[in-house]
Length: 258
Image (cartoon, rainbow, N blue to C red):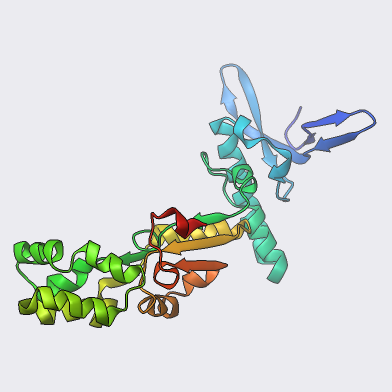
């Protein structure tokens, strides 16, 4: 072999009288350096077409092979993407995604749908302390209030369908000295939400890129969920979202997933 020669690399399998599969790539010899053993050549890939991984059992690839495949896909995307647009570009972006070493496309293809069983802490950054650290500067007092007054068990009652006004009045009857702080829980609920979590957004994007149907379960009051729905358009990526406050069942009750 000499520098400049073009070779066809064609791994494949053929079943006589049935079918055949072949992945064909054209490569050109290029100088790769000289050692004490002589002059060496390497391959420069010429074919710029996504390799269809549906022909490959990705679980059998070693790490070096994964690295090569990812590098090839990246090269194809970088070279071809500027030449196409619209649906063709979207198809190219999808077909040249990196192969994850643990959760490959073949695994995704065997799953019919994905149910995300919570939004808070996964997609949306929500924490009671974002609000109450403003209202109660002393850390010890703030912790006591959240553990003993506006505690999670109380919030879960509203998540399960209780009307917020009724739940608020009941708690104020137990802790009248903390009325203003109790009313702030839902009156200023949006201040407990700081935004989206980028890792969760990236997860949803990856699932949508492989056309995975998405469904969601969330413990949330029926009265506060509309705020999240309007603010975070990411939630519109889900075909259906079951809100505990609407169905009257909170997770982990098995009824919520039926």
